[in-house]
Structures are given as C-alpha cells and as structure tokens.
Image (tube, rainbow, N blue to C red; front, top):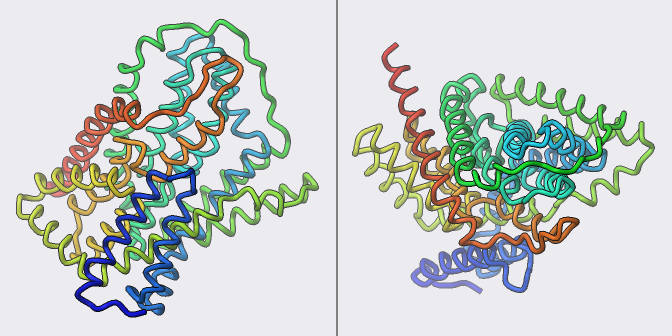
Amino acid sequence: MMIPAQIAHVVLPCIVAVSIVLMLIRPRGIPEVWWISGGAFILIALRLIPLKLAGQAVAKGSDVYLFLIGMMLLSELAREQGVFDWVASVAVRGANGSCSRLFLLVYVVGTLVTIFMSNDATAVVLTPAILTAVRKARVSPLPYLFVCALIANAASFVLPISNPANLVVFHTGMPPLGTWLADFGVPSLLSIVVTFVVMRLMFRKELCKTIECEVEDTKLSANGKLVLAGLALMIVVLLTASAMKKDLGLPTCLAALVITAVVSIKSKSNPITLAKEVSWGTLLLVAGLFVMVDAVESQGALDLTQRWLAWASSLGQNVGAMVVGFAVGVANNLVNNLPLGLIAGGTIQAAHATGPIANAVLIGVDLGPNLSVTGSLATILWLLALRKDSGGETGEGNLDVSFWQFLKIGAIAMPVALFAALGGAILMQILVGQR
C-alpha cells in the first residue's frame, strides 16, 4: 500500500507521535518496545519509509546495540554475583545510624555506578538493592530511591559510557576522551553537586532521623570480587578506546563477554541463563526509534530543527546555549530522551554545530529527564523497578511514585542543576577562549 505524498506528510508524524505517547503511558501495561516497534513496522508496511532506508536506520544503531548488550550483561552478572547487594549493605553499615550519612553514601554509590556502568544500571539493578537495604534499616525509602532516579541522569554525562544517549547524540562523531572531559567535566560536577544539595534540602525532615536497627553484613563472594575486577578492567578498556577515538560498542560487548565467560567457567554456571535476564527488548525499542527518527528526517524535520538552532545561535553563543539547553531539557519530558537525542544529534551534525551550543544539546538531553518520570528510559525503568518491588518488610506499601510526586522534586532539582551545568559549560568555553 502506497500513501500519496501529500497525505504521508500528515500520517507519518501522527504515527510516530502516537507510538511515542503509547510508549510513555503504556496502556494495559504493554511494554514500551511493542508500541515503538509496532509503529516502526506500520511505517514500513505503509511504505512511509522505504525498506532500504529502514534497514540503514537499524544498522546505524549497531554501536549503541553492542554497548547496551555489554552493559546489560555486566549489570546482570553483577546482580547475580551479589555485587549490588554487597554495595548497598556496605553503604547502610557505613552510615553508622545516620540517615543523612546514608543518603550521602547512597548518592556516592549511585554516582559511581552511573559514571562507570551507565544510568540504566543505576535505575534497573542498583535501585532494588538500595530498596532492600533501606527496608532492612527500617527507614523511609523514598529519599534514597529518588537518589537512584536523579543521579542516573545528573551524572550521565561525566563519561561517554555513562549514558547510551551520549552515543545516540554523537553516534557518528564521538569526541575523544580528553575533549569530552574538558567540555563536560566541570558541568557534570556542578550537576552532581547541585542535585545533591537540592535533594538534601527537600528531604531534610526524613534525613534528620536515625537508623535504629542493625543490618547484617553482606559478604562479597570470590566470584563477586572477580566481577569487580572485570568491571575495573572494562572501564580501562573503554577509556582507552575513547581516548583513541574508537567506537565504544564493540569493546564494551567483547569485554562483557570475556568477563561473563571467565566468571561462568569459575562458578560452573550456565551463561545462557544469565543471557535470558538481559532486556533484549530494549534493543528492539532503540532500533524502532532509529527507524522512526530517520522516517521523520526524510520528511524534512531536520530543516525545521536546523532553523530553530540557527535562531538560537543568533541570540549569541552564551544566551543561545542557555536557550537550547533548557528547550532540549524540557522537550525530553514530552517525547523521551532517546528519540529526542537522535533528532538532536542529527541536527547538530547537519548544522555542523560545535562549542557551547552543541554541548548544551547533550547536557539538555542527559539532565533534562530529571524533570519528570517520562524524561528518559532510565527513569521509566526505575519506576518499573519500584512497581515490581513494592511492599516489603517495613510495610511501606506501594512505592509506585506518581507523575506529580516526581514532578514536585524534579521541577526544582532539574532547572537548578541544568542552569548550573550550562553555566559551567559556558564558563569553561570562555576560559578556553581567553588562553
């Protein structure tokens, strides 16, 4: 079936918009992947995007798929070997009865996991471990769970590997590690610190309390220590690949496969069982998004976004960066950061944008999702993890955080942190320009 060109300009964006909305609201609890992949299939079936172009769009995401496979596999391996439970136990015992100290320790752990294992690992694997730990400590879990949600985005641009969206935005032109750290080191530090201060103030009543009960010390097994060593080795490999301007997907996947093979042989476990726990549907979701974005781009959408970017640039480099960063940050929460990251990345490359404007786009894509639960895939996965683990020993009941409950925190934490991060990025560019 071939739709006339005049109608295609209307039907195509409608199919994409409806698919994204259904992904966000998940009617009848149907997983996000089916709405996006279903929408992509309809686009192909109606010939709104040629089959060849759709295939090229899917192939374009190969580096992202390999990166996600490696990170998800390592996250599951770490979970299976009790690494996250051990980390959570250490954090609770290290708090020495202080809720405020526990809050700080959980924040530090979440930051490190996000930086070196990606924000999805923080949302999917660390969140249940932290929830279990704070329930054993018999304290209100919400402050610590919000840490997992917000730090997953606030620390997600420290390194290229900290967020799959980074690979999406710069998928054909990832900056070398030295350039990345020079551009995003200070902004990401400000994002992390400011988000902590805001959350610490907002949860000050809950954090004035003390932890009354003792928590058992969870021992890390020999295989768990081996996983930690493997993770450290993988981080070195990825940082080396980034410094050499190489793609990160293949090194991540190969390192994960080697580590998994070594641990499986040593523990005499079946790696197939571990592979079954990986969210393979996430890859299909990302592939569907690549198809949708290329379909929208084929209809001239990039012309519109390029004109808007040119208008923002005409305001001046610094003011333009602020406008772009906040516009992208808020837009994440309307369409989710993965499709927005794809469109933003295509716009940056088509417009040959560099400097503060391009940096502001990435900061907005990564940090903007802290506004609401619909902002990023990591935040949606965090919410699903809470729903799955509701109830528990303390009788806290349902921990299904509502849209408005999250927005009350995000409406303060996100704009303040985003302003600080964008200000830091602008300041660094000014200092570099004066040298």
